[in-house]
Image (tube, rainbow, N blue to C red; front, top):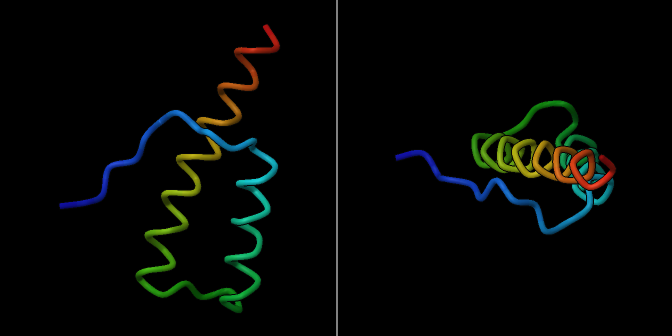
Length: 58
């Protein structure tokens, strides 16, 4: 069963983005299955953070 992710982000988008960049830099452009799973979770978290930031700005 695929993991479920909380759509609410507790971290700012720039912090999550930095972690995404770090993951790619450490992987030399090829993610292992575990890294890919982590990447997808980070994308969900980043999107939630951006959405939360946009809603707060409105």
